[in-house]
Image 1: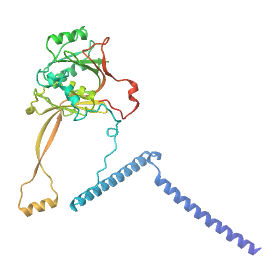
Image 2 (image 1 turned 135 degrees about the vertical axis):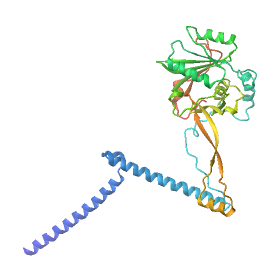
Image 3 (image 1 turned 120 degrees about the vertical axis):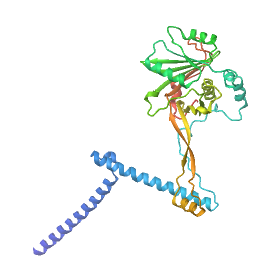
Image 4 (image 1 turned 30 degrees about the vertical axis):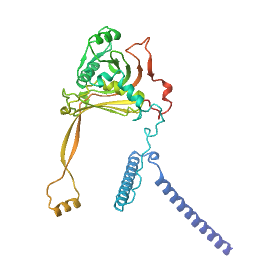
Length: 358
């Protein structure tokens, strides 16, 4: 009996020891699981934000280390006279866009011949001075009128006329008689400008744009006031045949001889078929170049005490700020009934994120 009790006691002790070992292993696994837990699974808000900040900080440090290692490898390869490693290009929607047959090429003689004989060549070759008529829809708002006033400060030789009850076709005929080169019609919906018509005179074409994200000059922080100098014009990423046509239409609104003393620049930047408009003034400023301790030592050794200066460009936004999206391009002047369209945006065109038309 005594021996059997001893055996039972030893078995129970072994079982308890084994259970404790299993519990310890389980606790370790739980700790590892907790360490792998995503911040979104943590219910406590303060702890969740702390874990997220820690992970973000670690990721930033790792990224910085990798960048320093790449720069060191690049410099070392140049010093040794070897071929430096290729720089990785990030994969974006822009550089993975679907192939398009209408993309313009530098050796496209047909395109250049067409540009020399199109509707905009008279203005772009400085044969005619642009003269723009700006008007509204019949039911306009104070915000639309404020937008027109700022457009007049952006486009030289622009004049605004009250729409009244006149049809747009009659306004086109009036503008032809008065030698205007283009009409800009601002459409308003619920007191907010939401559309823009640009009609090239006398023979078209007519472009209809959706207008969005309008920010007037007074709502831009630390904005500048534009001068009356003729602005420089920057057109970016109008790469297709349609984009080239839209770019030349926009270009025909501005004089082709900018006044560089005014330091004004107007930018139309096309990205994924959205045209972003910005208006800036710029200045070139000389700033002392910061040097490290090695650079200072070499200067002291050479006996040069003069600080090096570098020229930087500073920008000040003048406004307004808005975004355009092309809806249609029509042959000739404005005609809703018998007009023939060169291009119309349709919903079935938006089946791919990597297909662009401008």
